[in-house]
Image 1 (tube, rainbow, N blue to C red):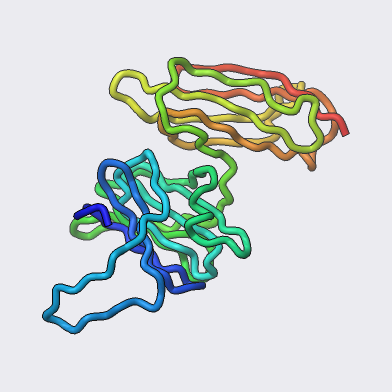
Image 2 (cartoon, helix red, strand yellow):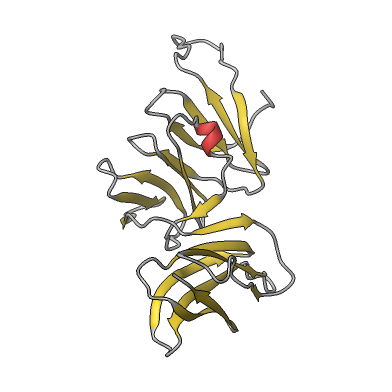
Length: 244
């Protein structure tokens, strides 16, 4: 509906059979054509007009897939894979309006494909070029949410909220770009008061932006805990209190 667009991502909703196309360059837009579709015998120049259902501020969407049960969505960029879950009764359009989450991914040369395993045990990625490797990422549920894809001025680790908490709390942190480097290896870990590690909340590369991570301490006893972030040369520690 808005002219020619470069797009490399096509997804089919297994619940409705609607087709979704995600544009690649500039502002990423998601287009939908509802089932049943109009098919034309070649040669013909008749086309169906797609509907824009949502858009994102990021670009370079190079692949995507909707899980076989229709409950989960992946959209891949060159350096990241984004994840959304879909509640019962939601459309894909509505699910994509939720906060963007990321799932584990190791950067590949020209990595442009992602798809769910048919048994939902994880997802596959694949690169372009000759003799590419097929990678399987076993299922790991995402915990960190990218709140805003931007460039904060400084690194920061916020105070968890609520605090004291029982049993869940939220931790916010910010990662700025430094020079031309827009990605950082980030670790966020939780320790007990004696310094013993009790949880790893984040352990991967992340782009510049503002994040929040949810921590569930239902398996831990009451007491004081420390959480520490390490992102490149930046390091910070905060305290939090679990009261059951």
